Image (cartoon, rainbow, N blue to C red; front, side, top):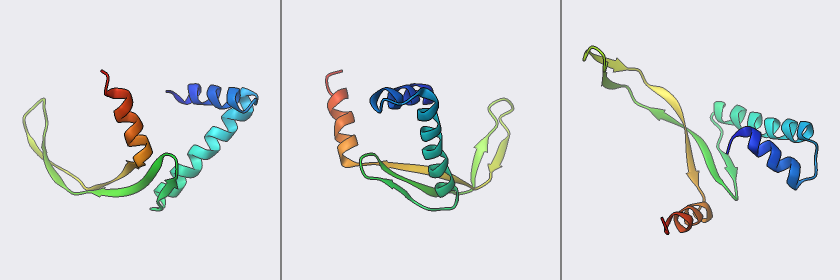
Length: 96
């Protein structure tokens, strides 16, 4: 699902104009992004938890030249789905 599809779905289900739904969706996504960038956890009870993690410095290889290089440490966003979402995903995918 793309952001545009999400906006259309919110607009339809909540009987809003697409413009109003777009403002709401963008506000929610912005609030989530701001909280994560500050190092806060974002807990959405029906979805899961977004949190900030740290990736350590590591060695890598340039695929073009084969040169070994050092990849610097960086902050990454981690997501842990709720049990309900994990079960739903496994139930839907079980028949395939």
